[in-house]
Image (cartoon, rainbow, N blue to C red; front, side, top):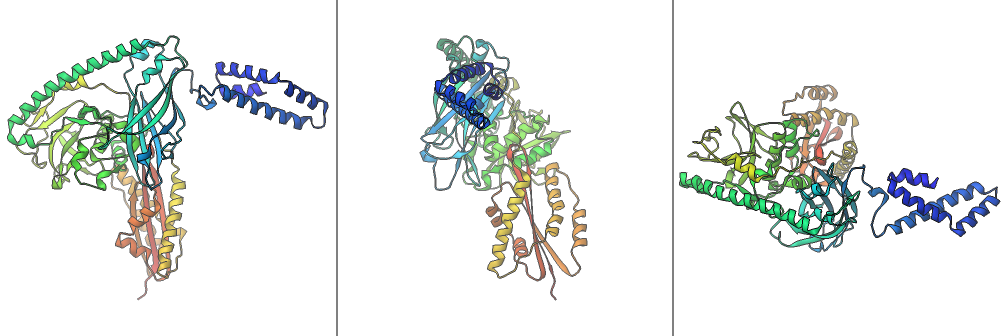
Length: 600
């Protein structure tokens, strides 16, 4: 029975054989044999003693097995999900994160990217030595031979994210040389430094201890000379391509600025630094994303607009954000960034839907650097504002003043028209009189297509979150009214009537269509008695911090009138609806309403 139990739990022949030996050895223990003999003599207590013996044997075998595997730090749950070859990434612990600790309670989360898969760790309390203990598996598919594994150039990337109640911040990231695991059949241990992404990007913010292992083991391990030769060959090839492209772009830029003196002042951004301090062609930051979790371009725009934008909190020296961008996987994992990151993600999603789209670089009012997206259909340009979800058709007033260049994953154009004022710019990209193009062949030569980017499904329970937020907001309203010596009575019926309005608001933004509110208006007219006044205030958020939601709502005069309303037969209602998108990006709709009898 014990052996069957472990066979079911393990599902690995190699480990099952090992467990059988442990069980057999334990059953030959003289003390255990004596206990079994006594149990057989005592027939009355035989069932109880049998149960105790089984429990004892299981505990002892588990203990012995854990001790036996201590050096390998291997757990039953850590077995790979299939018989295919995998890269096992074990995060053992972190240390030296002292500088990231502050007075506000915060947590640490790891996002690990390799090939076309991304894994996310459980959140742990941020401390000097965070207790991170996770094991991830990345399928290597049919890469059975050592030679094939040595040629995989894609990096193992780990992003370190600081999580608070209201914010997510990319502290830093690191690129791990996973191919070192090919040198050791038992895997290799790496103490990986993590570097910050801001002004202190050259300073280590902490260290994470990793163990990398190929499972099942490869028959013949690689040598250090083989790995060194392979990586040196790749580096030399990339260096040569970079040299040729840099020479080409210098010529391109010289021709561009010589056309008109004002061109030297235009924000034509060909290169940007990523979070790993690598200078990259801006086209390489875009990659078509295809996922079943986002069903239309409109839904893609809604998804991106719900990701927190740092420019909403500060616009001081925004040009700094254009010096360092974040790669798509890190930005998706962080779910927080500048407008340039939002534009890159939106363009990647729209490219996945096959649209002819580009990221635009220009300026908003007051000369603030800005990035947005443009799509072309029948030579008509439509502008998409990434962090608001708004679209602007030809002839409509747009929030951007100038446009200096545009690009996607295959093309790059610099604006060489006499003016860069957006209302006067002509978007005939194939006309060399208006736009100067970088050779697509040169762009292809320097971009290595990366693995497909994966979006993770939402795991939040929207109903539970909605119920919790309603309860907390009711508490805040009750306290507010209590301070004003006002009674508080709630109407579940009135609260139910608010649902169609919230559903219409979200549908309107997710589908980019006008949704009629006629049903909601008719329900209110029918349900609110004659002589009564009805007032309501809706608000939309992308987080679930109830206190911050309530404070934001109360900045509105209309919301204050609702919460502080008084009169005969006064009843209030609160309705919250949470709409989850991929990556647990949330659209949170809140409506507060009041109904009371008018007193003449």
